[in-house]
Length: 304
Image 1: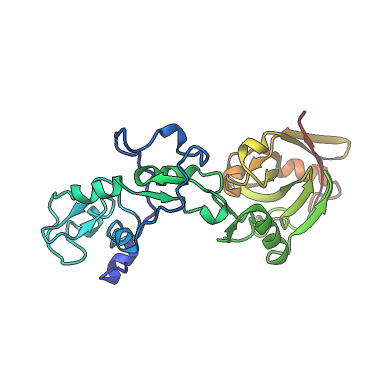
Image 2 (image 1 turned 90 degrees about the vertical axis):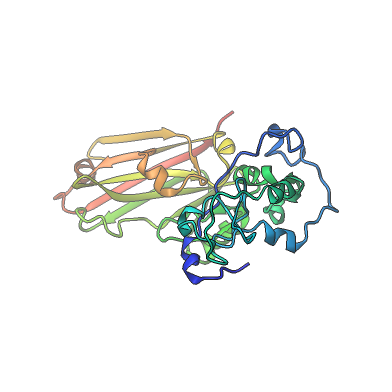
């Protein structure tokens, strides 16, 4: 359903995860993320007209209680009501505080498939439990882990591996050990100081190695860390170590790879990796300390 006024197109927001109302007929909350526990009903269909009734005319997301309506019966989600200054986006009448209880009851009677059905989720969920399930669904796609651009591609792991190789031209390596050299002529600059992402294939899994400089205060800091291409519960089965050194000194980091469910920025800003201050990096580089020359080595292993 399109917005009647292009002004409201700018007001679209992501849906909130709203707990279902307390109703014994809706669903046991323990099964919200388990498609084996959800009823599998291949014959359950919901007509497009019913779906449109439950679609907010402003943000185009599914509506959840309280669902508001104007005196002419036009509905609106609670999130968009304050954004339209209490005016119906369809007829421009004042909205007031009328709640559409009938539509809320219709929604409570519906059971719908997960929107990640095409990725393998087979569960059918009550309307008010569906959004919460989808926020936790193990089949939900991953975001592209490439850090060099704001890539919006999503998909499963095999698709993202092909995407990284073909579209981002990422280096692909087989094996659980690595030895990389990072050189920069002006270590005082942090712009474009990012290695192209390197992907390692080992133990039947894929791992992303990141190395970059970013600003902390007035000085650049270098960080190297590993991310696991899969969920966090699987990432915990692996560990990795990183080592950097020179001039008879070395620094070692050991940790657990973070899932790519956590964004590159989130991992970087939590300092969850090998951190090298600029002065130490220049010391490791040797020479006249005017050029950065770092060699980072490491390995990945599976915990027993």
